[in-house]
Image (cartoon, rainbow, N blue to C red):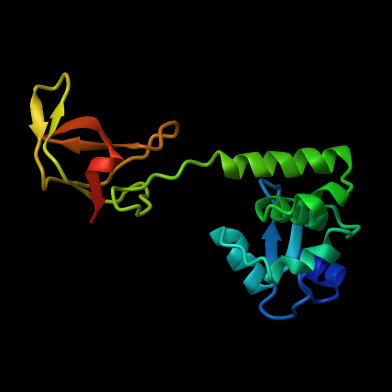
Length: 184
């Protein structure tokens, strides 16, 4: 039996968070092994909001019920969403087993620590994007100036610094501050 069939049977064919029966599919909770125990059956609305990070508190009033689920993955997802919504009143009422609490906290910490690189206009940068330099920048140690209007293609994003990108200018690999860049 595959995961989707198992989850459909477990949930009774409805979203395990909000109870909707529209656009249901498997949603893994945090870094998982893809098993049924670490996945929930969620509707398209819940999945879209969870993946985008733009949570509609009115939609997620359903967590008042789903937080009491006997299914660990549903409880963990409810705990994560309630934390992101700032609903400490409900979080404090929840009871999670020790392993469920570890799972929920590690998932919350992983998403909180994920770096987001943004250009001077606040546009999110992705690895492989192209950017334009907005100001002449002296490149220390390389003996040249990265000129305004220069396009830097196929940028890389350092894993530990959110206000810099890595790219090639004049054949030299350099770090550039994102405040002086605009996504093309």
